[in-house]
Length: 312
Image 1 (cartoon, rainbow, N blue to C red):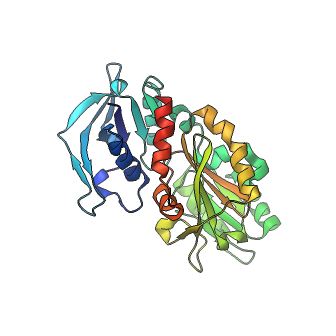
Image 2: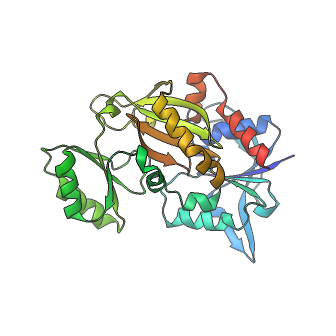
Image 3: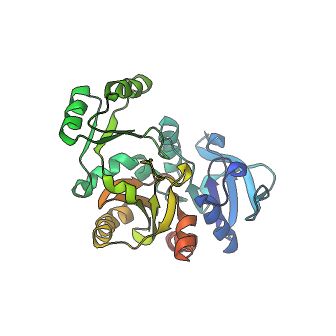
């Protein structure tokens, strides 16, 4: 029996209708794997051993408010597990980075998905810059004059935090907007990090394509269409998921990423494409597996486990 540990946010609080980790875990139980759940705060490095305090997952059901049955609390040395799934949500802060260092101490003897070393070195909005030929016009900086000139050149822009997630703190400014300096003050007073500014892509009104790549191969895709009057297409802020047939440019982007993802051990990745432009490569805790599986009538979690089992 394969021993799987899942590092994730509180399992009692997840939305079972959309949560990717829940879907992956259910598939693991179907395959006869033994599951152990723990939260990142309960991961400790002690006397040279990486130890997690958590609970075995006895049962998972697609029943709201009755979706999980856990065993008694225990501590496990993760070096004795076959697989650790690193599935807690961002933000990608120093806490997240620290967990990648800790998990790196057991990988690859214990297979960590995704490879923690590569996760640490591939933040969603920075890793994408390795494929700049597919990106929209972008600037990453704290220099206010450079941002002002960028806005002058492209008129309509998007401003967002470099390590944000889930569509939070994303702002659209057009040529008539007078809030640029105020927004920059807000960002820079709350953080020492640069921000990312991109040319606005009007095609976002028709949707943001999310593609799940499994060990570099296309698993499935959806188009996330924002609500009227909204620029964010994230499903949890009201975006609508619809069926998506990938076009030649989207297929070209996937092919260009394939070898890099496979080489880095980034088994489960979600990429975002707007109007033919690659905007993000999500490697921390990619979502939309359930939505794609339902719309395409496939089982993405099964594909994910096929890839993981081939690596064990």
